[in-house]
Structures are given as C-alpha cells and as structure tokens.
Image (tube, rainbow, N blue to C red; front, top):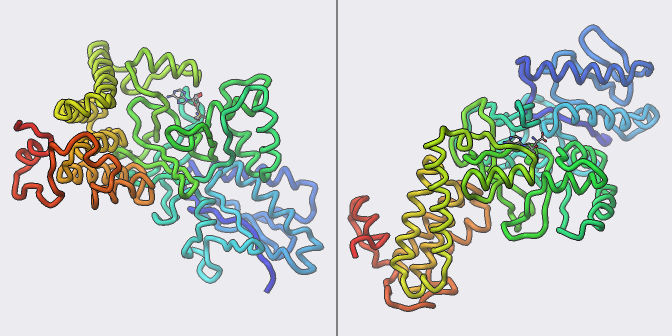
Length: 458
Ligand SMILES: C[S@@+](CC[C@H](N)C(=O)[O-])C[C@H]1O[C@@H](n2cnc3c(N)ncnc32)[C@H](O)[C@@H]1O
C-alpha cells in the first residue's frame, strides 16, 4: 500500500535518432543536475536514484516507460522521493513536452501503463489524456505529430504518420485565458494569473513565442499566441501545444473552441502526410497583399505558403477567387436580399461553395459548414423544410469532420437536420417555398438532386 507518483512516457520513445537524441540530451541534463548528489548513481546502463523505491532512468530511451516511486511512508519521506520525482519530471517535460504524463495517486491519477504489464496501456482517464493532449476517444498511443524546428518559422508541429481528413489531432485545455482589456492593466493581471499557475504551466506559458518583446512580455506572449474562445469572443486562450502550430493560407487543420467542454480541438481538414507540417489559418481572408500585410503586422512574418508563393498568373487567379469569396459572403449576409430574392441568395451560396472548393483545393474545411448553414437559413426563412434538412445535414457532416461529434455547432446542426422547423426563423420571410421535410423528391441521380437542391431548374 502507500501512495505512488511519477510520470510516464506516452507513447514510448522509438529507437529512431529523432527520439534517442532528445533522450540523450535529457540524460545529460539529469546527470549534470545531480553530479554532486550521492543519492544518484551512474550505473553501466542506467541512472539509479536511491530514494523511495529506487526509480531509474535507462540510457536507451526506448526502454523507458515510467519514473515513479512511493511518496508516502518513512523511507520515501526521509529520502525526499517526491522532490526527485518532481525535478526529473520537469526536466523530462522541458525535453518531451506533453508526451510526458505526470500522475499522482494522491490526486486520483493513475499512470498510463498498468503495473503488471507495463507495455499495455490501461484505459486512460480523462485526466491522463489531457496530459497527453490527445482526444481520449481516439486512443492514446498514436504518435500523430512532433514539435520540431521549422526553417524560418521557429517551432512547429509535424505529422509523424499519415493523418486522415477528419482526425482529431489535438485536444487541449487552456493554460491561461484573458479578456481583452486596456493595455496598462493587461500585464499586471496576466502576472497575477501566471503566479497562480503550477510551475509546469508557468514554464509552458513562458516557453511560447513572443513576437512583441519589450516592456510587456506577458501581453506579448498572449498577443502572439492567444486563440479566441469562440469566433466572436473577446476572451483569448493559450495552450501548451496548439500554440506551436504555424500559419498557412492553405491550411490543413481547423481549431475550434468547445464552449460546453472548455477545450480547444484541432482536426485535420485534409489528409496530412507523414513529415508534412500541420498548419492553421491565422488570416481573416482577402487577397494575398491584404493577408501578407496583416500577418506581417500581427505576427511579424512574411507568408511564403503554397498560395502566397504561387507564380504570378496563378496568384492573380487565387486573389480573384479570394475577392469573389468576400463579395459573395457579403451578398449572402444581406438580410434584404435574403428576404426579397432568396433564389439569388441561394445561387450565391452555390457559387461560393464552388469557389471555396477551387481555392482550397477540395478541402474548404469549416467554411463549407458555414455556407451550408447560410443555405439552410435562406430555405427555412421561406418555409422549405425539405431543402433545409439537407443543408443542415451537410453542415452537420462538415462540423463533425472539422470539430468532432461533441462540438456544440455539430449538435445544433444535427438537431436542425432532424427538425428544421425548430429554427427561430422558420417562415420568417415568407411561406412561399413551403415544403415539408418528408416531401423531398426520391430517386434522383446526383445531377438531378443538385439541381433540385439549389433550385437550378427554375
Ligand atoms: C503561435 S506562434 C507559432 C509557433 C512558433 N513558430 C514558435 O516557435 O513558438 C506564431 C509565430 O510563429 C511564427 N510563424 C507562424 N507561422 C509562420 C509562417 N507561416 N512563416 C513564418 N513564421 C511563422 C511567427 O513568428 C508567429 O508570430
């Protein structure tokens, strides 16, 4: 009996140089730290800690799974076992980030690996899974990515395996959140928030990139890294791993704040090949010149992504598409047009979808869900439940792909797909297009169905 605590390496390191090099660096730092401590002995193949239950660190990283000991009882207390575990954990965390999972039975956390069969992962608790930053439902052992230096971009996330579209790559709780506030208050408030965090969280926060070094370092870190908690939110949050994701104007992932669960997720919005960088869009759209200017001003880099480095005529074509996307989006959002010319608004939605598909090379991500929801609203506002249900279903599928089944937006679309008339604007403009949900035509081929759905026969 007694209380155990320690940390596990999840997933375990491979024999590849990429893992072994970091392990060697970690072992060197532990040796240096304890060189004058005669409780830590260098054995031929491992470091032995003569504290508590004598945990050890092998010299070959792939042989390591766990560093732990009893922390209760006379021997553990007299030898300060907990101090050693805490220090070695911090050193491991600096080198391996979220792959190192801390646990303590005193907080009802149990290690990732069972005692009897240390190679067999136990069913993970949500606490342990948050430590790993991977969605518990997807299984904990998938080394989907690594954080590594990317030429010209600082650190970034790189896929270790092929990641299919729709995969949840990451799920993280914020290290720290902050409301937007006057400049002079920010630094003080952030400093006091930071003080209340654990040492690990403080280190995670301070290790984030600061694009605005100077007198307000905490604010600089927030400004460089914070993601809004929801599209219109004035609250921003920073995360231990998500904040390493760099920008691309042709991104391959989508970030989403789940307000119900208080976490941020990252999903693959197109297939990502092993070795490819995982990217997010930092921009708010527009042609390349506008994007470049904004990225330079807010994030201090000149974007040279696949789109921005297209040859002249192709870049012009991309810019034209981006401008068209903005124009169509504005036109769709015009309530008067939706009320008086719903057919034209629906045609604009269709045109926007085509343009998105082209510009984002078949994977427009969550933009697709938004346009489908626009088409839903136009249809339902004129009483057409049949088409509205189809648009809601398309939006639902897209939300699940980009945000997961647990996303509140996905759940909202699911409810609307089952009962489109429950939407507040059902029949709000007219009942001119009145159709029940069940009266959608059956037996149409894909082309006929598309024409029916988008009212292209009229
Ligand atoms: C949220 S951080 C991303 C992680 C960062 N690369 C790091 O090393 O911690 C944002 C910063 O990363 C860099 N960055 C992001 N995307 C980039 C890109 N496409 N090209 C160059 N630098 C980029 C910029 O310095 C930017 O201010």
